[in-house]
Length: 284
Image (cartoon, rainbow, N blue to C red; front, side):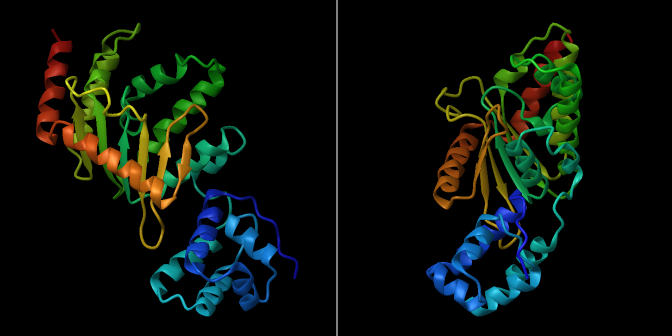
């Protein structure tokens, strides 16, 4: 039977990447022979450009001697999921591939660690703040496209209503932003942060104004964690939708960076007190 070429979605690439990790020291040629494939087919499966069935995942893992029934079943299940699932699929072709990948990675994470050195992170932005960030961006987009991006960012926030754990580091300097539309934008934004800080799955800490500028100098970043056996993913923000990787070394570097910033951030309760102080100041 002819193997169908698949669009290398992030899900397909992660399935292939996990199979490659399980293959470990087994040479690709030897692993392919175990399945009766040629090395080209195996390579394309591992890159996510060829689709693999759940039964093929199970068979390959059995032949490789993978002793992880829970992990194997998780990957087999993911391999069977149809391409184009999730609310974000409606935006395919309308936003960049990297951004679409990030939305899917974010939506499926069990835990999210996010830090931004300049603005309030997207998952915690109020509707008014979102609109300010998108409609007044330096890159000019049509009003229709801007409204689509606003809708997408607000839809992403649904992860907070699930069991997803969020650890967010928010720069106190972001609370001093002034908008032409008035102080109401920041008042609503601070209320949004206070509401989020009361959620049981959210840990919100402010990076104080007194923090040395080296903290966060690496830029905005997100660390995404998943259920077994999926590896963690880190994403470094950029205007094209971010760069994402599950490379263990790069993940480790950014996890250490996040931990260092978290250590100098205000504790949760003091962060909440500081937010209230800023809110009171806006009412004067």
